[in-house]
Length: 402
Image (cartoon, rainbow, N blue to C red; front, side, top):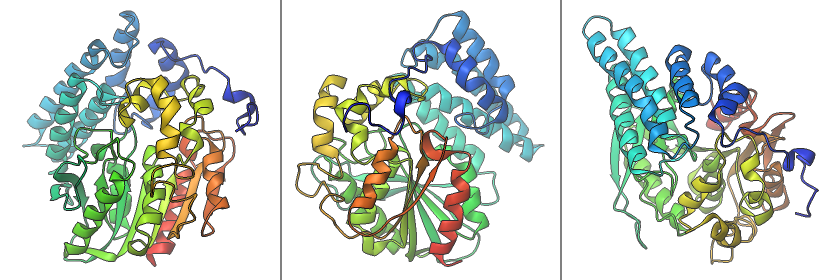
């Protein structure tokens, strides 16, 4: 991409100014979303978060990978868990709300990437809390560990999944929800409720490199193919799930895998949604050189370096596009888009002003292979919220045939 030609225009080099400053992040970007309970505060309460951020600001704690940042959230999260446990016996509805409140606080504690030993322990606490709360629901979440029967080249032997399904025997149409860089299996309650309301089951998986749970070798660009082969084989062998009605939905960094899956496993899917997806430019040196200035709360440099398994961000900038691009990746079988492989129906959704995954990446998909279905939201940033879900759900209903 020639310098200066990005659709972001001047926003490409604009520094949003909140990186390295919790106070600016809170005041400029997070305080208002927190009052509304939207990303990344969904299911949380402003009165729980406000004193935490006041403490972080007062103590000048600005690095989210510092244990001091993570520890600031834990007393509140654990208090909410205690209150929820006490409420279970006499106020089940209150207990469910409190467990979700605690889950939201744990999510911010491990934000933006599970890249320290403390954050790994916090994620374990979060999952335990989430499953305890979910066990109280009429249609609970099931924590499933399946065999990774296609594992090789450093992949681990099992795959952890969440399964949530409607009442009855099925088989149910199923959404394969593919999570992102900072959102993981316990962070999708609202989506699973939407799926249940439509009579669909949901299988949730984490992407390579983002949690210690995902078994796929993050340094191998082909490991996702093996991961999804094992997951789709399990869906096909599970009586309550209809293997003929499976649609994938990849969120943010997960959108990359939704695109790859749409090509590598196109015969096994009714469709796939690439929502806020990266394809090629997002891991190019020019884009990565500016991505730390954009709207993402803490910058993406360290998270990307850890996710893809490089020794440094400089190494990542130099090598990642050559190794992982779906258009020009040099390894055999990596560039599924650039090679013109056939795909299933593929919906591409994002905000035009996305500073995490350039809209140019979504547009690239129109140049290759089967025609794609696309909807870009003008004047919106990463993911195209709040309009995006109103685009995706009707498309899912059409593809599922309901």
